[in-house]
Amino acid sequence: MSSNDTRHVQTELNKDEYEQFQKFAEKRDLSLKEAGHRALLEWIERRQDVDPTDPAFTVLDEIEDHSLSTTETDAREEDDLVEEWHGRDASISLADDPASR
Image (cartoon, rainbow, N blue to C red; front, top):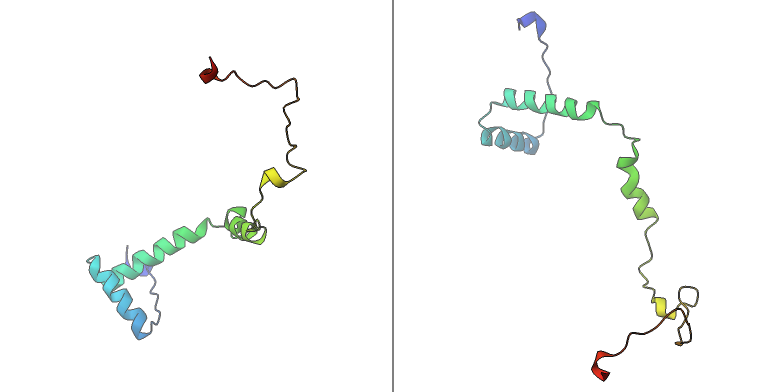
């Protein structure tokens, strides 16, 4: 790449940000210039295909908004969920107790 093909980008970091960035680059044995270059390219790549309106990004918000109540329901006590069986239904038969043989 010739120097006519490149452009320079500059930014400012506060002291803490700069120290974090410097440590990050050092751990990866990179110069600040190379670390910044890689970070910027990765950020662009990740953001290119992201559609913030994609339902995958909003589903957790919807789940939180429509979360189930924390009250537990015992189906044995809910008339509309289960009917008590008194053993008179002909379609249900109990197996013989093997211990009574």
